[in-house]
Length: 599
Ligand code: ADP
Ligand code: MG
Image 1: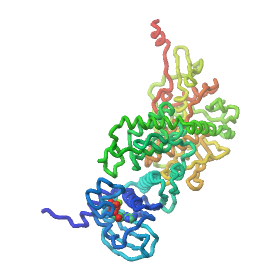
Image 2: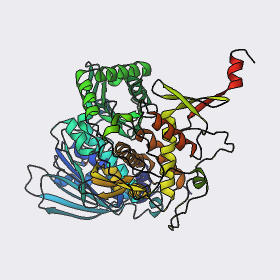
Image 3: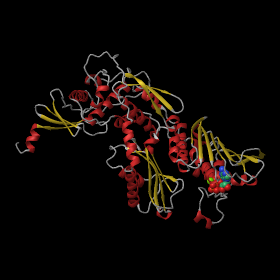
Image 4: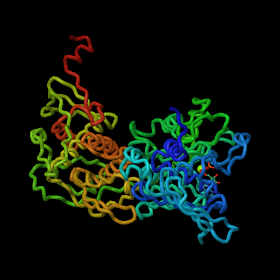
């Protein structure tokens, strides 16, 4: 039998297509506020938006007699006829959002137009009108949406954790706040204000408000092109980069987009200025002729297609190169270098009581200023026997990949010299070795971190001046397991008020800047990873963050080289850096003789 579904059922089905999670409700409500000409928008959520979403604006409000109509399907004030479709200047026009939202939630709206004396309060539960009464309220509109999917419980199952859902909302509001720099946004999560922007049009300041972890003095201005094709925004000097693309946000004609074309152009623009695996921060706003874009993209999708991809990519690259070459960029890059903290805060740390002469791995540059400290060198045998696991039941062990063969013995190596400030040349009786200092250091650093994480005795050193880390809303309100994981690795880190954390002890084998860089990148890694639920993920995060922590060192002293080789020898896998690059290449005497056609 074929039936025409009743209104409530068809509404619920239609709502499922628009409203699949809390963030889609927030998106629709905020877009309505923007369309209403709001100058200030407050978004408040609880439990990732699952139980409570409030959006308050100071926009035009809704006519008293029209509030109920606004919740009907295909009810819109933004277009009147099909002709208007060619000329849309608002974010919404389909007239479906409010109908969909109210079908699957309990919705309350308070609204008042400027010229009206009183406002109105309307309550709907699952699209059913419960109340419509005049009420005193400020100009503008407040939408309160509670109990998402209370009448479609099957959908609740598809929601992620509260923290994952709130991350999506934080991300969304961050993008709107960047795109609409003239609107003041405020975001509140479980009663905490995550950020608020001034709405006074200063984009750089807006970036700083939303992402306190970013030092905006390290960003340079991009302003390139003409009215037909223009790129504006901010990018980081090469001194400030991340292990992933989390710090890259793109807008095309005002809309937040994901775009491989812009990603590639950006990368090209930085060519040779960043290490492989490092990504610049970028807040880029591209304005282009709408006819150059694929207009058929779905409004809720973030992808954008350009008619001429290569040309757009080259344009972005040019704009970035240009920005990095400006005097502003050069000065900022120089400042970033000058302000690098000197490594002289280290305190003597003798509590390990080790008799070995090992002095750690230090750059000769800072040598005079450094107070020596003793670290127990890892002993190969010790690493290979599984370290004692802490009593926590769910902690899994990270497996350091251990190669089967170990034809590697540094004992009788004679170090000849270093070339290109990067490669150590060494020989033994029958072999010639070229060792990549940086890869070797990364391997050592990584294994020590993993060992530290696995072992019960954390070897830490107090630092004289604590490191203060500003942490973005994402990391504070999303998955915060980075905090306990850093502690597991030997950090002493505590919340220090308003989005800051204080590090007062760091793992013994780290230099100050290494400790700071590692912590920053490690926290940043949680932005896209979501939950660091198992050892494989944790291992990946550690690997990734090692990269930035370990600086490319130049010009090592003889002792430093020997210490490095000794540490490398102690590694479970001395053959490659954590990312798979070899730490050394080896040529046997026989191979060399063959090269010269002697054998
Ligand atoms: P659309 O945005 O596509 O028009 P919606 O269902 O989102 O459809 O909203 C329906 C109508 O309700 C809008 O056209 C607008 O007239 C009114 N409206 C919704 N939210 C607001 C708001 N915050 N301020 C003023 N008017 C609003
Ligand atoms: Mg709308």
